[in-house]
Length: 131
Image (cartoon, rainbow, N blue to C red; front, side, top):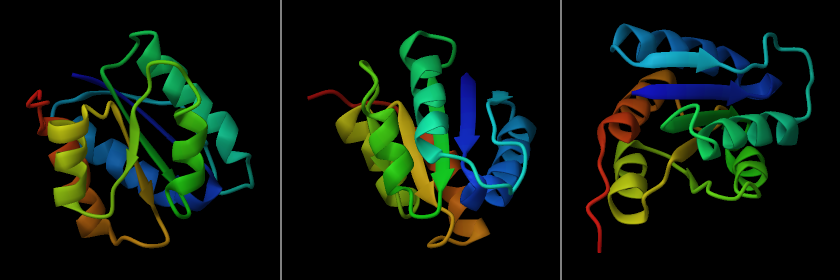
């Protein structure tokens, strides 16, 4: 599965960790930035990942900002994007199974590294159950 990642400066460190995790798990990963902890505008990254998923460059996307909310709102402005904010593995899995989410957003200031790992794995391995 092709997965694109993006974050703002607040999510940079967690994104770097999750990109490496997803690649080690066998996913085809593209990191769309940001490339440092220098301040950037989160809407730009949310839209970048949203467009990549909406136009078929990737099947799923992962976004990270401070809260997970702002970057998700930006991504959801792109036609074809269904971005859910998740706080744990259960909410990430259900976003796909029940809501057919194709992008998941996380708040780096609110979840720890282990929760983020579990959540990304749950999101990337879940399938939509229909209904």
